[in-house]
Structures are given as C-alpha cells and as structure tokens.
Length: 68
Image (cartoon, rainbow, N blue to C red; front, side, top):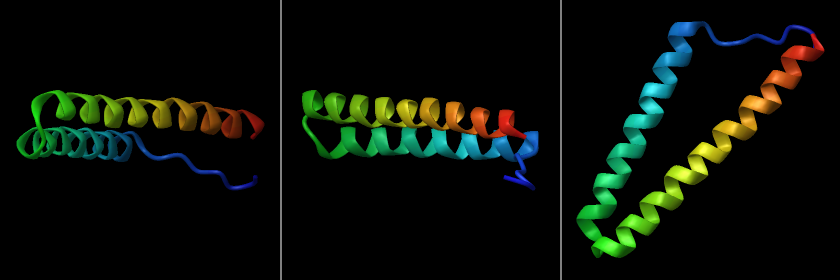
C-alpha cells in the first residue's frame, strides 16, 4: 500500500458538496414525478444508501491509512 494518498481538504469539501447537491436534486426530481408517499420512500432509500456507503468507505479508508 505504498503511496496511498488522501484528498486535500478543499477537494474533500467540493466532492461532498457536489454529492449532497446531487442527492437534493434527485429528491426534488422524484417528488415531481412520483406520488408523494412513494417519493418519500424512494428518497429515504437513496439518502440512507448514500449514508451507508459513506460510513462503509470512511471505515475502509481509515483502516488503509492506519496501515501506513
């Protein structure tokens, strides 16, 4: 694992802002095309899936950095 590099703070913030904005736009889009109750369910599923990925990758990358 030689040469593992992490993102600079500005790149990390930019990527998270773009990710959150895309989730908000997807939520707005779902609410515009689906019935309200189904749109809420689909939006919750997308946000929870994204949060789960964030949690999973944060732990995985923390373990990779700790091995250095």
